[in-house]
Image (cartoon, rainbow, N blue to C red; front, side):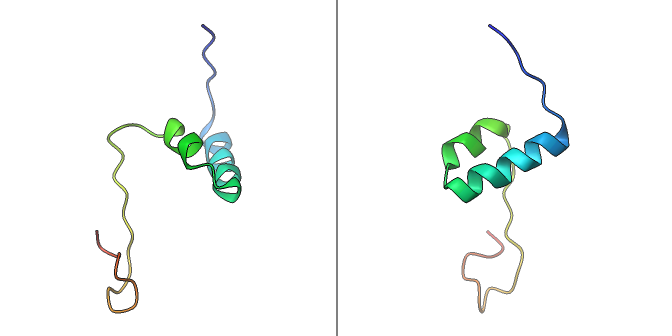
Length: 51
C-alpha cells in the first residue's frame, strides 16, 4: 500500500475543493478522529454556534 504525504497547504486546498463539491466524506478522511469542530459566533443569530 502506498502512503501519500500532503503538506498543510495541500490539505487546506483539498478541504476547500471537497467542500465546494459537497464531498463531506472526503473531508473527514483528511482529518483525525479526535478533531474538535468549533463554530464561534453569537447564538442569537447562529443557533448552532458555541457547540
